[in-house]
Image (cartoon, rainbow, N blue to C red):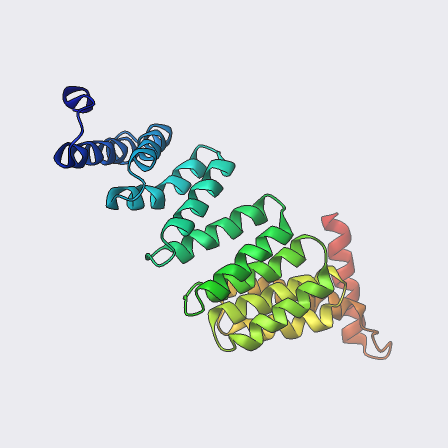
Length: 242
């Protein structure tokens, strides 16, 4: 279609070109399942008609397509362009969260926190605010700054107390405490997380392991023969497993 209308310019023909580029991108993405082809068509649409309604839709899809083909840098550029071009358009806050996640995955922890903070300040009423706060806390955890991570998880829990994200913060705080060797505090965090966490089985598994480690570390009264027997049986079982 683009070949047939050539380079002639008019409002009507520009409308046709925009529709054709959008359609080409949609066909590549949906029917051909070719993200590289789709990204090329959408990027061409954005380049030629940056302020057209079709270009805004193309920007919303470009970042995800770039991620599918492993082009993280291209995805970051696309999401940043989406946010900068239409910050008030629905989905801009989601694009900002994707930026933060991509930076976190790349190990760029400081920049990930900055991106998460920008989401919270720029879109204070966004439903993605809790996710951004949790991501920021996890950046400390992943970089080995456990005390900073615990403080950040506590902040998330206080701010969003009684929500699923608060439960996730408590669970991750428990994981952090386990890594520091503080099973007693971890048990408390896991127990508090258990009620509202969306994966209670994972929380229960971590809780049970922490409780077992605590139990093995407790002194046994030598006159309590049942307890001595149980402890010996448990140790024997571990020896056989190894």
